[in-house]
Each structure stands twice: as C-alpha cells, then as structure tokens.
Length: 409
Image 1 (tube, rainbow, N blue to C red):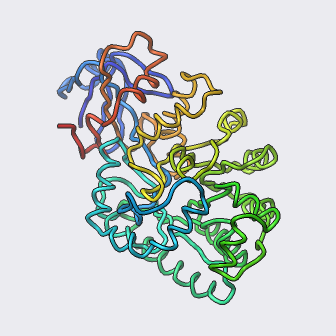
Image 2 (cartoon, rainbow, N blue to C red):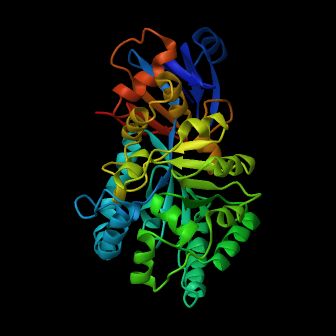
Image 3 (cartoon, helix red, strand yellow):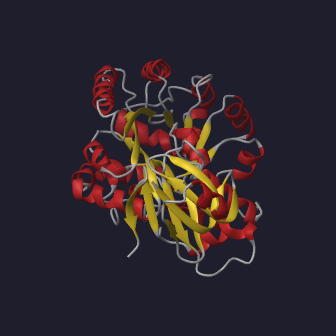
C-alpha cells in the first residue's frame, strides 16, 4: 500500500487541495491528510514536491506505431499528396519501424504520462512490443481492402490477427477492431466486422471524414480521390456515401477518428448513436485538414479524446504536445473551459471510449496515476488544467497498477 500527498489532486473534474491518495493495485481511498492519518496510521505518507498535481493516467486512444520511423520521408500539406507518399514509401517506413523504434515511441508516450493507448495495427507488427509495454493496450486490428477479388483474403488475415491479439487478453492487451475508412473497405466486410464487434462486445474504431477530398469522393466520386483511385485501384466510383456508411454503425458506439469534415446532420447522428471522436489536431493540420468543429461537438455532449495519431503525420507522440496544439487551434472556445475539456479528453472520456478501468481517481479504479509538477504555485484553482498544459512537457512520475514505471530524472 502506498500513500501520495500532493498540493493538488484531480478528482471528478476538479482540483482538491492538500489531500492524499491511498493505493495498491487499485485505488483504496482519497481524502484529507487528517482522514488518511486516522484510517492508515501505520503507512508512511510520501509527500510530493511543491506544486505537484496528481492526475489519473493519460490515455492516447489512437496511435499508429507501425510508421514510427518516419521523420523526413512523407509529404505534408494535402491529404492526397500525403497518401501518395505513403503508398510510395510504405514498405521502407514499415521495415525501418523495427521493434527498437517502436519501443522508443512507446517509451516517449510513457514519459508524457500515457498509461494506456489504442494501437491501430494494419499488419500486427507492433503486437510484440505492445505486449512488452508497461502500458495497457487496446489493440485495434485494422481491416482494409475494397477490391472484391481480394476482400475475403484480407478479411481472413484480419481474423487471424484479431485471434492472435486475443491470446494476450489476460495480460495488458485488449483486442479491438478498426475499420480503415469509408473509401478503403468493401461494405460486405465492413458489415461483417461490425457484426463481429457487436458479438464480442469489443471496441470499434474507424477513420471518418478526415479530408475534404474524402468527403467529395463519397458525395460525387470526383476530386483528387478519383484520380488516386483510378491510378492505384482502377476504380472510378465510390462504393458508398458518408450517410450510408455512418448508418452501418447505428446502435453500436464507435470511435470515429478525425471527423473534421462532419456537418450538422452528421453531428446529430453521431450524438444520437453515442459515437465518440478521436481529435488529432496536429495530424489534421499536417495533412491539410481543417480543425474539428469542437465547440459543436462539446455542445452536443459528444465524447471526444485527444490523440496523437502516428509519426506518419506528427512530430511526436507526446500527449502534452498534442494538448498544446489543440489549445491554440480552437479560438472560439474559452481557453480555460477548453483546457478542462482537454484534460478530461485524455482521462475520463478516453477511458470510457476504450472501456478501461482507469481515467478517474476513485476507489476501485486501477491505480494508473500521473504526477505533474507546475513551475510555480497557481494563483487560481480554476486554472490548473491550463497551467498544466502550457508548462508541463514531461511527467514527474507515472504509476501503472500501483507500480512506479517512470520517474523524471
């Protein structure tokens, strides 16, 4: 049993002062120092450094580790230009993203306070390192393929990868399903995958409306995507519309990644079906996308996470970097309200989206805990989220299941 005392603890979306948290593998109690001294008189209290803040472990719901070697290879500025560069360089990037490279990427996430992540896996290459990771991992086996002649083979491969990841469900791996996108997966296998997710009651994710090119292709089979599909797949028409595709997920809460091109009707449908959104602001900027209409998402009470995506469209997997970028992009939301929402997006909301047992500090939850340290004493309790995002770049300490797994040197 451990007891940590901090100047501030993030509990139920608020910050409480001069309290402590008691935990082993699970959280046992949170309360004032006097209460804890009376309840646990024989346990030594570790008093953290001044201006320390205890948070639940941070969660990155959407990351592609298979592209972790990319730095100066892929093209940024437009989605289709980036996609072409991926097609041209994919094999080299994946080959260079060896176990050591992915191990470093996983460690970098840990250093920023990430105690759980959602790995989007196209080939299963990151499973070995995810099994070894300190963090809890929701392993999204991705389904891709729109050619009718090959979809059965690709679906069979997808099932094998899903089964393999399921073999480690008693460890830190939680199997899940990812459907790549409306434009890249045949509807026959999309329906199979959704039915399978419902049967197994496991998380389901899909890239959705990431670019204006995708939206135009789904609506009219025109634009930059038409040339791309003619060149690579000998395809001249979209297999679905955005509305028909989104309707396939009715009745099963799904994590929609990016969604920057959603309109008001899409937002209503997402809200009605209790879907959630992975907000990846840096990735969207690099690939020429516009900002997510976050204010509308918040006004509709739609759950959203803030996620890094992969190194194929980012410069780091540091979740604190991502929060800083999000804070600067959404100028139509009060900065303090936005900061609170962003902290919630990588704790409680992300936990609920992935179906884990962390995300909040309360009795019975997993003891996944992050300690951050502010540079000075905050003059307002209402600004701690903002100061944390602006001034913290690395966790002081990280605990997973009650064990310390990272400590800032």
